[in-house]
Length: 109
Image 1: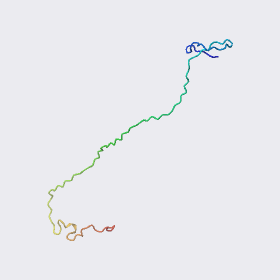
Image 2: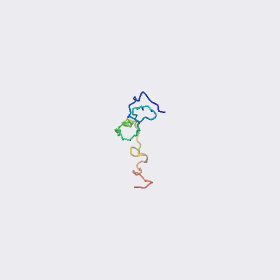
Image 3: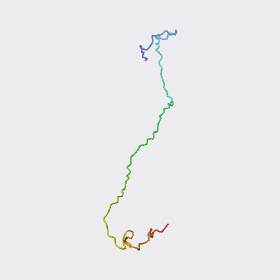
Image 4: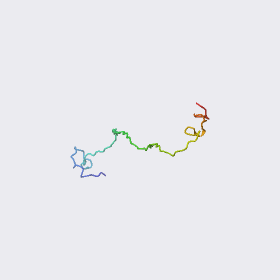
């Protein structure tokens, strides 16, 4: 059975003359209804992500130690000199060993 929506449907419209058939009533014509069948098409949308590369240079303080050296000459005590001994004679006296690097156990290069 067909239901009628009187709020959306129009009043009966006259129809072209029809042959009467079992005393049928005039049809009610409703407004056209639209059925949408949506489809979607992909479309590329460019999205730009700008980057800025920043090279940062940081100063790091690292302690570096410097030392100063001071030589002082002070007057010492007076010592009596002994014959055959004195500055430059050392423990060997007048016959001291030859100066130089001496024998090298690994050989000379």
